[in-house]
Length: 483
Ligand code: SF4
Image 1 (cartoon, helix red, strand yellow):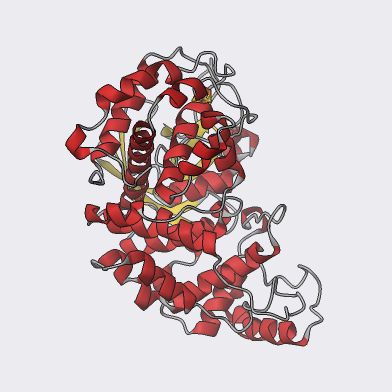
Image 2: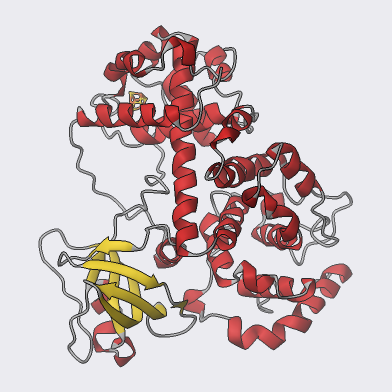
């Protein structure tokens, strides 16, 4: 019998808190987890930090309107509305990685920044307080954000993979006990994903939050932020008012892929024809959409499979918008078999150009190329569709628990090696299903990525024996499958 969602999530949460309450404090130095300011701004604008905060002076700050993401010079966001201790203020908002960038970037003497009503940052000097002031000597309220959104989880940096100290205690646990731990960690992770969507929905709308989440899933890890920024700069509500060619021009233009200088002139005839069609629309909207080079979306091309080139990801996103009316019920209604429904919908995703091209300028492939591959499809289901649907209907858990796993990736392999050592039988047994993989990743992120002592000070192994005391009663055993 499968434990209902999110009952086991609470067990894992208590276990996690208990383990960490016994841990020694580790002081972390290190780099800011956000790749750059655009990355941080995308998390902010997507509403992932929430909208109610406490400022550096203890004031209550409530974001009423996130405003407009500035495409040119001046503060990052304009036409922002917020309440500080109940008083409504309108103006601009600046987001920096470090509070000192206000001066370093010259905002302190730039009158364009006189309208700023809030300075947001994620880092500040350890010893000195740094105040924000404008060229007309006005003090600007400050907001120090946490270094990760809390919904996204902690930053992903990978330690060397080697079997960890918890291999031995885990090997003494029965398969059922290990499975119940993975189920609980998976439910906890799923609940956080649902919560993240909920916060994004509260800050934007159902439709826009799901659109951004789908774009992120298409971007995979490397271009997740870039796709989120694109989704924010091309809101789905606006895209739906356009016809297909105009919509694609908007998406590819905003992505920065229609710059003539990029990649030179295409030689294949069909690429020239497709680009020509995009340009027929792009030139009319270009002035109002194109950003300054400083605010251009940063795409990562390194290490991508050819099929996952960012331009194909944008092609797939355009395809999803074409099917938006069919997609919408997936998170608005009770759908009988979500996996089947999503599979059928995404199988219908066709694009005459992107089914045969790797990039806008590449020669056509002889065979058709899938717009959304098997693992992407699984991640769309697991990271977006199920968390979205389960906000309203927790009963989807047993369907979610039956989803097959994705092909092993580097992170999953490391997690399995650290927790199960070289016991390949157990590695396989506990990575067959998507939820098991997710549970494993959650434990890996919660403990392995938090450990800075080569396992020595990690509290997880000693506390594993306590898992039984938190485990469900026999009648409600959390084994989702026969293991
Ligand atoms: S860091 Fe902790 S959880 Fe990770 S392998 Fe080492 S002992 Fe296990």
